[in-house]
Length: 145
Image 1 (spheres, rainbow, N blue to C red):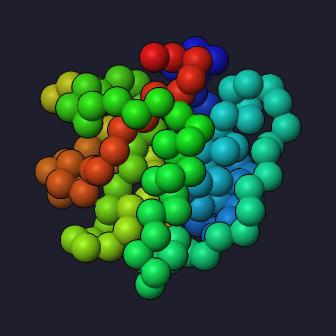
Image 2 (spheres, rainbow, N blue to C red):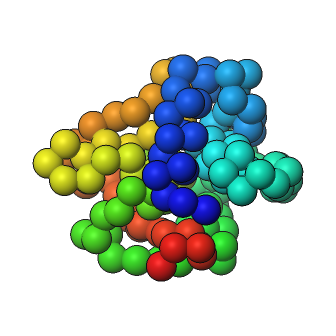
């Protein structure tokens, strides 16, 4: 999988509406569905199923379900070592579980990331200070250390 292809494919998803547990470009996806759909397209393989999950990602229980799943499938890397195509994991509020993911699109002074955001759908956002403060983990895919 070529990283620029992942970012280019993710950009074709921009404008897809937000749909919890969705993973179809143009029809609807959530943040995890965006990652699943992009990887399926980039690898020309079928969309891999995942067990049903709640939109709160087990926040009432305090379980880091999404973080554990990503750590099992991807390669953890330093948060301050950005590369295009990295998977970003965010904690949306202090003390909450990490439950939002995106893909690093641009790096450097004009860094951006692509994510599916409830109420906004898939968009490319500036990787601004508020998002940087929420970042709790960064991963690369197994195909790219």
